[in-house]
Image (cartoon, one colour):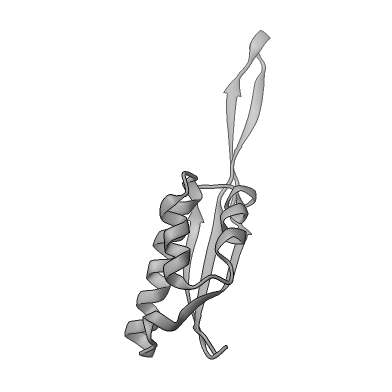
Length: 113
């Protein structure tokens, strides 16, 4: 593969474990096929990945002059972001901690070799 162009989405409001399911589904696909998979998926992470992938394609076209028809999703990574800790009331005056997990989504595209 030639040069990689990437796009980031920091602090996406989804756990990394849930987002990685969609990352595995589009890794290695052509851009048009990956966008079709994301458009048909009912998962919340699909819309997040769709935005990031479109941004990476636009970066490749505008900044690097790459041909959009020859692009492939080369790498997709999902890292854990900051976790917000919140509390919910429970029985007998107790509290339970809830975690609002966030993640960082990175999508890289490159031209087919």
